[in-house]
Length: 132
Image (cartoon, rainbow, N blue to C red; front, side):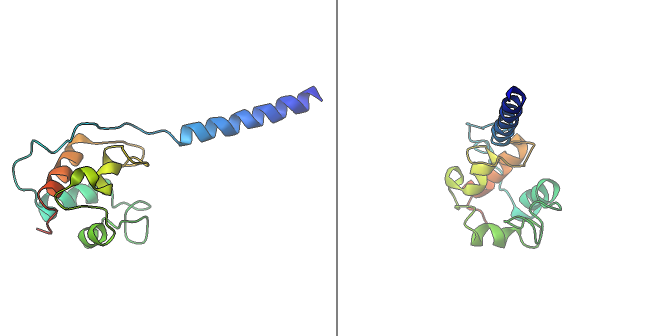
């Protein structure tokens, strides 16, 4: 009887520990990372390579995987059609909320915020999120 209670409590403890560890954030960035960038950010030359190297991978944000599709050919349309960005308003853009840890899951998944990536994307959105 006692071993049965111990086994049940051990199983319950294991489930609780898995639930707690699966719901944690990597970190949250409070400062707006791209406020100091003054040069014009180009979607094609500055932003798309960031997505290609960090997001548009198999099983993540590639064609046919998790939305939005951030492959070079589809990223801009996926971001705008899916309302992931609000031009000129990075602080209220879903994309930035994921990148800075204010919305779960924090992106890139498992790695957490990357200041260089966040700064460029923040500046691009602040500059009007143009398809340039």
